[in-house]
Image (cartoon, rainbow, N blue to C red; front, side, top):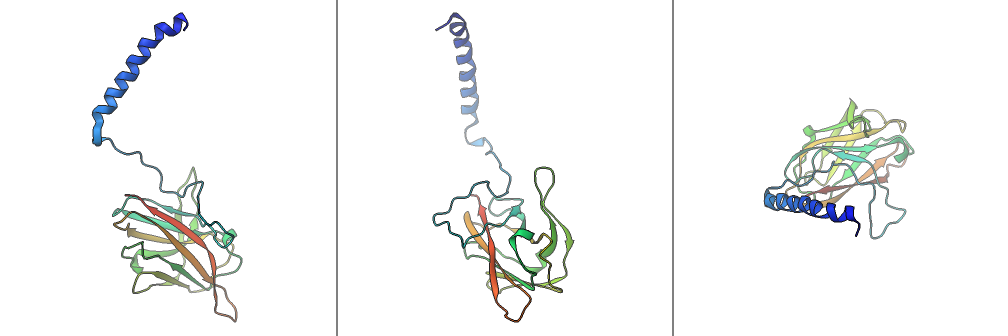
Length: 192
């Protein structure tokens, strides 16, 4: 060991010992680190196949029982045709009350490092929530072009249990056949 390292070593040990006593004194009163409520950069799926498409979303709060704003986005690259009807399916694990008066169908501004995701303009539409709360049907007054970023803004309370829920987007395009096709999924996590 060099002379400089032997002089510095007791000093460094003193600092690390002080840091240990400081953090040890915090106990359970230490606050957990809070991360932004945005989707992760990497997502792992057991059976990743071509039939699953990840959609972008933003939520303001991930803790259970907290009021949160959800922005479920559909970007132009997520769809190929105009939308006549949009259906969002909600799994049973997402056990919270969703009321149509707390939902808005909007033209969205996608956020990033320098700006927030937000609803720019409300699109006139009829929004219906199923009686069991497992699906949301959106009927725009006019077909929605595939050129704009659109989405559903929800202002709700998070469920009371920690879970990971997959919301699916199904869209019906204008045409003769009233068939809804799969657009993608939002994978939403509620933390304990």
